[in-house]
Image (cartoon, rainbow, N blue to C red; front, side, top):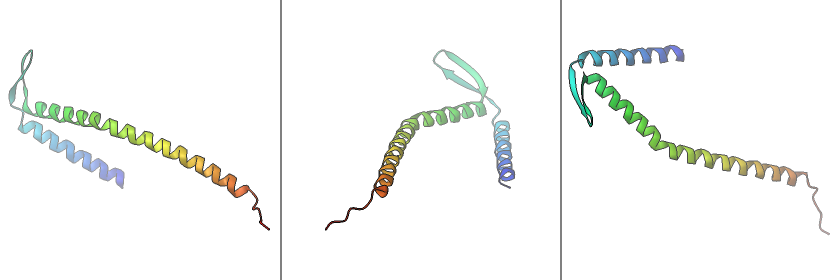
Amino acid sequence: MARLFRFVVYLIVALLALVFALLNAQPTQFNYYYGQLEIPLSLIIAIAIAVGAVLGVVASMGIVIRAKRQSTVQRRNAEIAEKELSKLRALPLKEKH
């Protein structure tokens, strides 16, 4: 069921992108440092969205890497604590007289 739902969502997004591309197909002049191009407006917008997404992922990579490193350290500390606890449980109790 979830697979079907995901397929329907992807299909709707693809249809919306197609309609957007068809409605914005007029050529637009794109100026850059070394020259200019005439490309469809929808392509300019799609490229801008893709570049923004890539920049967002790159910007968040530092936070993700730091969180994964911290998680690894915490997991190691938990394993050490569990080993120490199992050793302490195995020790016999000493009675004081």
